[in-house]
Image (cartoon, rainbow, N blue to C red; front, side):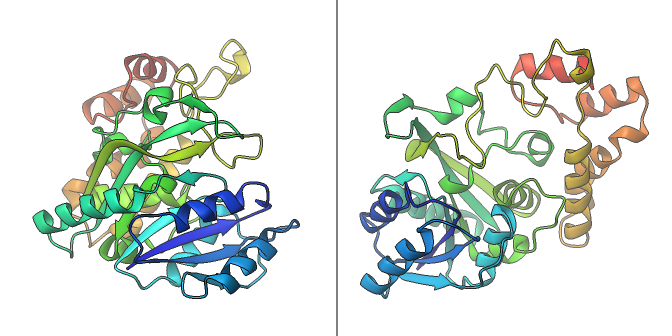
Length: 307
């Protein structure tokens, strides 16, 4: 069984298409656990309509709170008891084979490493506009993501996992369910935990139509935008790069996994969390010698010049 966790917020425009794409999955052993995060539109009505029509497929959590996307998904994880968990955004469209491909990949990984190993599998995505017209066949290429760079040191400054494209096993859900306030987002946190305690695997197939529109919580950023650096590069007030929030996330990771992950595995995160205790040269040596740098050369250079 796969639990599909869905958090909605004013998503009435695109929500029905996403729900229909779930019903069209070739793998049918799943249920949706949905929660609305304080919508003022018809999102709740739409969820209830599907729950009434497909009673065995949809479970709606009604608490009426406004938590934000990350903590809404964290709460949904507490309601999930399935062996595997997927995360669903309200405005995308899943290809019919999405769950089947990710489930097969997960089973392969669990046969190799064991079901007790925290495992995350994920895929590429196709970028589409609000009307599902293709913008680009590969989200990874569009954003300059190199999914093979999934060691903890790499992930500290560049997340390669998109929540709506991933499937996690029960071991990872148990290890990463408590998401601290210092985390960027639930998918980023789970990727860091998986890299620390288990395995991350991917398929290059684009299994999600990743819709880009004005209301995206997070969206695609072209390679020319050097994540996580701010825009306005020629503005002297925005010239300096800051990894302070990423350092706080790393510190929270070390605290959460102390005693569960080996100190050697967590060492890059522990060092990175103290980045700003070092001087100008020390910061650069720390990033270089621990490979705590973005994937693309232009990003590496920009960080080393501006950190």
